Length: 482
Image 1: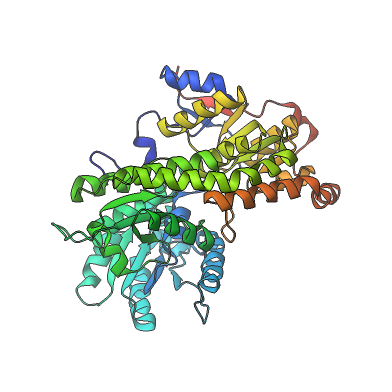
Image 2: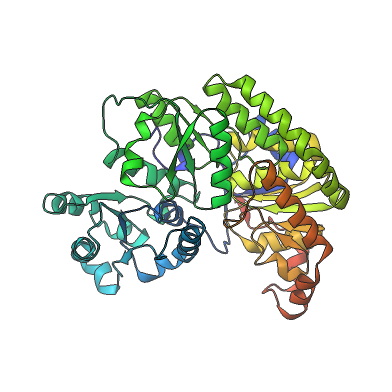
């Protein structure tokens, strides 16, 4: 990846994934570089980097995905499989199929004797059964701990089989910051699939990096906006292919929809292939859509065209935003999501005059500091929980703060009887100006029709005693320094 980067996000200076407190205090501590590294003495659930490596690539065409792990490690693929199948329907791709996924299925004997023989068999089976162009091989905690040499196995078999073998080192224990899984995938792509040396540039081609959690409606909207600037998107890696991957160095510029998805990879492309990039925000809400679009326009000298488009869109949508604002103004919000979406949603609610009371996000770093300082200027002090999953903290905070609506994956907070919705909607529009209108109406409808959540709270119990709700939600976060 970029020079000096290990692929593990904890290796980046001033990156934290275990802390909590008031937003003003945290921002001041980060600014003074006096936040201390911490860990949790108790942890409930953790999203590992392997999940993100898998989900980022599972819709690649002409590919087979081998997971060198016990069977349980592929349980996380259910959401990515669902997205892939729904995405095919939205794109008119029939017959709909599932990703070609093979798991080596470690057992106790493999842990002792090694699993390389099973990996060889899986690779040979993948070629025999599917005849793919690419075979991605994902490592796991188990294969990493016992030291299976995945690269050696791939190198040996590459001499005798036709598909390109791409080992991805995403052992879950290496990083508690799940976005490291994106980096692991892009490190493998850069090493095994990108051609070295100069490549002829394609005028107007832009690398558009986006995760699987971007809906087809959003993809079309973003591509339409890029078209206004005379740009044609090479959409990577969702619904991508070997040919599209190999066009990456030919691009004129790069950008990402998610702020944390391909930031390190875009740095490498700039260093190796002289491809400038825009790294700003996720285009959700008026401010963020404006900022994202201006960032891309500045790369290609189309600032005038961008301002004309933004002005025309504001004239069109602002009366509609005001209608939604009348339904939502003053409502108190708790937001939980990935680093890109959580901060995007927090900026979005300002469009509707809502009040942020709590924010849960996996990572605190320099990018997060920029967003939090912006939100502090709007909302003042609010609670921040830097947590990869940890639903026990989320439930404590939501129960304590009692917001009017919870925005995020609703599995836990919905059972408190609070209206819930989310911006992690992989099947419906969320981005751009029209996506913002859809989200605003969706939030308002949920607040005005809370019956389902109230009934759910009466019949679905959460696994926490009353005493837990009386404790500090951050009591298990312990400083590792000082």
